[in-house]
Amino acid sequence: MATVHANGVELKVNRYCLVPDDHAGEAGEAGEAGEAGEAGEAGDRADRQPRPVLVFVHGLGFVDHSGLSFTLGMPLATVADCVLYALRGHGRSQFVASGYRLADHVADLVALIDALGIATPVHLVGCSYGGAVASFAAARHPERVGSLFLVDPVLPIPGWTELVGAKLEKAVARMRDGLTMDEAMAALEEWSERKAAAATARARRILLETSLVDEVRTDATLTDADWGRMAGPVTAVFGDASEMYPQAATLQRLVPAATVHVIPEADHLRVFAHTREILAHIRQHLGR
Amino acid sequence: MTRDGALYASVRTTVEETIIDVVGRVYWEECQAGLDSTFAVDIELESMEVMEIAERLIDAYEGRVDFIPWFSDMELDDLIELTVGDVVDFVVDSVERSRAGAVARTA
Image (tube, each protein chain N blue to C red):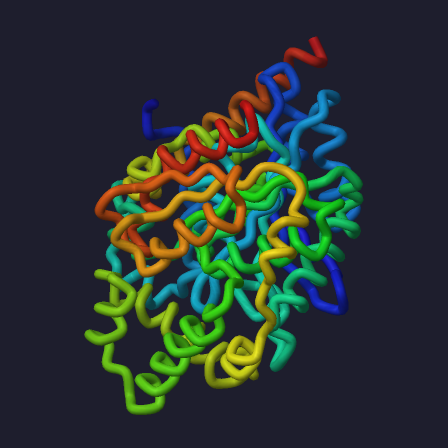
């Protein structure tokens, strides 16, 4: 794991790029980047053939990039140069009291890519709220984004700030009223008290000690023209039992060439357990 | 793999102490964890904790252990069922291969 200074924020980053067995030593070095410079060199040193660069953007609140690292980043490291990082305020990235608008996350993302020395357009994999960040990045920096792959995403379309803002405000209210462990475990669909307690503590910190909720409520929205400016293919995976699923039709209207896959009977949390399917769709998206 | 030998004992100690550094000794003892304990269920580790343990072990073994190819081949169920003993076995195997490679290079 490397710490990269990007846009004034310290971001925790992992980068994975595996090479064939005859370069096992280099693969080891590529797998564990120590400093920003090493993280930037890892992809070049590991393999002389150009690999697509995948940058993963995780969801909001109590998660970070580690889950996606194990389920998506490491498995895809055989076909891509995979960059995963924790958003500001999340995981072991720098905790900040403000700066949680999409424009802030996108500025962090672009600065991170620059700091890692990545000059080619990247393929963004946006999960949940990370889908909003990835979409915003693709609209604002089409020259830096080669394609979009979205997993049960929040799309920054009209109404998104009300939808996400309401959920966050409900969570804040429950925490202020005194959330019990049973309620936390039910909300997180988590059987482990230990994991539920840790996730709740992280959620409490970011929701109650930052301006995140206010900033989401007043954040920007992409216009139809913004979606039209995006370069490269767009693929999305939705769970048909997810609250995000109604956006699938909107995405197809905004990006007629988008490919949309649907996982039956999967709600927003369960979609991410379908890792085998998601990996297959990402490989197809990359043409690998 | 036979579970004996000085290397195995040393690695087991390092792995367990690394886990303890992350979760705390009190919790480790409450878990009554052993080689057959799973990270996800028996020790109830979050993915960020497993990642931290892996990175500390990479540092401890100075590049002789690379978890990434190993993890990259795992399905989600494999990750959920991953045990302390699996990690010890993997580290022992990695260190032994590294030693064999060093001997071959100097031969």
